[in-house]
Length: 425
Ligand code: HEM
Image (cartoon, rainbow, N blue to C red; front, top):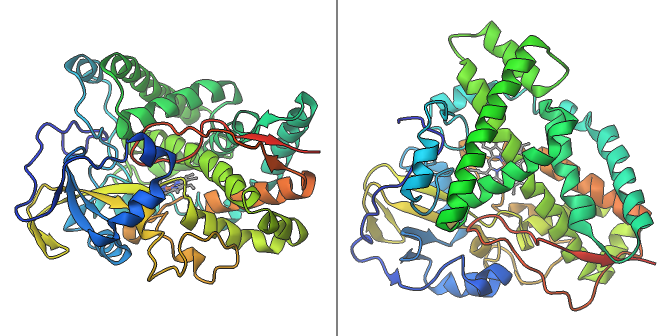
C-alpha cells in the first residue's frame, strides 16, 4: 500500500478545531468553473478555511502556499494523484486487479525516493533534448494549421490544434507509437476525471476499466521498448534501469511512463487555449506579439499567472502543524488555491489586468515549488511559446468568435475550455 500510485481515501477527518468552515464553497460549482477568479479573490479575507465539499483545508495566500511546498516533510505530496471523492465499491473492485500496480514515482512519492527517481529523468528533460523537439513541433503545427485553414473558418481551435499537438509531442518524446495517440489521449481524459473530477458511479466503473487498460498498455509498451530501443525517453530509462538495477527498478520505469504520459499532455493543451483566449481577448497585446515575437516568452508567463491551466494542487499533513494561525492535525488534506495566489494584489499589482509586460509575471505558482517543481515546466513553456509564435506569424488576423459560451470540464485542478471557436480573414 505504501507507494501505491492512486490510493483510495477511506476516512475524512473532521474540520480542524477553530478553523473557519465553509459549508458550500466548491471548485466544482458551475460559476467557479466558468470563472474562478472573482470567487478566489474574495477569499483574500479568509486565507485559510476548511471546505466541507472537499474535506480539505483551503490555503489561498502565496506565502502560505510557498511555505507548504517548501516544507515537504510536514506537507506530503502523497495524495496528489488520489481521487478527491471515494470511489464506488464496484470501481474499487476493478482496480483491485492484481496487475493494477503502478507505484508512486514522482509527484506523489516522498523523499528520499523521490529525489533518487527524479535524478534519472534529468538527462531526458535537458534543455537540449527539449529543443530537439522543435522541428517536430513546427512540422506538425504547420500541418494542423493547414488542415484547419482548409476546413474553413470558424474552427474549433481545441479539436483542430491544441488537443492533438501536445499529446503527440510528448508521446513521441516518450516513444509511444503514433498509431496509439487516440487511445492514449482518451485514457488521459479518463485519468483527469478519476483523480480530480466527480464522476458518477457508472462513469467510475468505465473509467476504472480504462485506467486498468492504460496501465496494462504502459507495461506492454515498456516491455516492447526493452526489446527494441529507440532514441526516446522510455529507451533511455530502460538503459538507466539496466545500468542501475538496484537503484531504479523496472516497475519504477513503467510507472514513470504512466505518469509522464498524463502530465505532459492536457495541461499544455489548456495552456495553449488559455494563451489564445488571453491574447486575442486583449487585441492590442496580440498585435504586439505579432509584431515582436520576442514578447511571447513573458506573455506565456503572464498567461500562467492570469489564467493558468492548473489552478490548484494538494498536500496532506504528516504531523500536527499550524496554518494561518490555526492548529492543523496530522492527516489533514490541504487544497492549494493557485487561482487566488496568482491574483494576489500585494504580489501582483492590479492582479486582474492581463499585461504581457508585467515585470514579475513569472512569480506565479502554476508549476509549484520546491523538490516537486514541475519537471515539464521548460517543456510546456517551450512548446506553448513556439506554437504562439507560429500562430502569430501564420494567422495574425486570428480572432475569437464573439459571444461564445466556453465550457470547462468539471474538476478541481485543471482549467481549459472544451471548445474554442476562432476565426480569421
Ligand atoms: C502548462 C503545463 C503544466 C503545468 C501548469 C504543470 C504544473 C505542475 C505542477 C503544479 C506540479 C506540482 C509541483 C509541486 O508539487 O511542487 C507539476 C509536477 C510535475 N509535472 Fe507538470 N505541469 C505542466 C506540464 C508538464 C509537462 C509538459 C510535463 C512533462 C512532459 C510535466 C511533468 C510533471 C512531473 C513529472 C511532475 C512531478 C515532478 C516531481 O514530483 O518531481 N508537467 N506540474
